[in-house]
Image 1 (cartoon, rainbow, N blue to C red):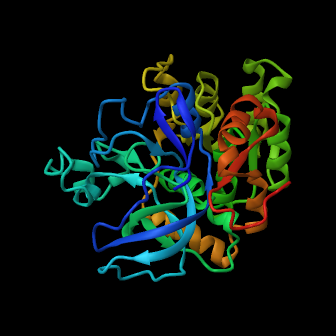
Image 2: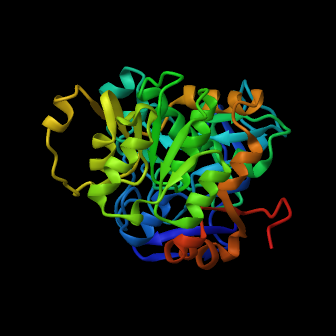
Length: 385
């Protein structure tokens, strides 16, 4: 089948000869991909990888799969076949796919070298998003959504309303990342919020906060296009480059009700400057959540008393669970997340054959012009010009 494939370090290209996926266990579905979004994780695989993908001669911890594999994990599609044991879905259903690979998925690959490995403590406790062996479909576990079709077990699929626009359905996964972060923060309605970074996750956090009843949101973002879209989505924006970093922090604190800092800060950028700002822009007993993915070897200076003196909380949020997917879909259904507002995240849609040049490379080289680009493997719908 046609796919945009990670063959090896530095070798990502289109092919029309990737092996077709086949249903192998009774609870699996075959899904035709309508749209698959490009994530920052995909870009890191291109510039710094392999990160989640295995090395050329190695195998994924969960599945035992090696390379090549189709990339892409922000998926929405149509069910075209179901296994004999599938209970919740039927052919024709519209679905979003939750792409994690964890201990709970080892049964799908009984011939993998580690198929009998004990389930890690996180998975035993139901917190599979923190699995010791966490991987992603489309990033090493198995081929993903930059391909015509995918096979996945039904526990990773979520039925979408038929009237939810396809391109918006492809945003459910990144918005679920943001939704989980808000749940981790134990967000309370009526609280003040600062988002640091107006990229896809920052904009997704606006939508997720809307779904939690929050509309009074400040976004700090240096790129004008992203500030413009944050404004269109109802946020008040701030340009951190208008002055020094040292001056930006008091400026942002003054933008909070009471001019003394925010109840919650969500760091969606993942830089030393935004980590510092996420803590210093809090009011007393405020909560800062790191939503960004940092390089594993990237250390920063950290001063515990910046938290201790005002009893602040700094925590992290990892991926999502099924609760987050279900709640995001419910929020679209009841209108607490506006599907039309969500469209603002999408810069363009690109055919699979042009995915490397017109999508992956464009996101890397034209950040000031792009936010979220979707790949359409099957050309189901009219594309943007």
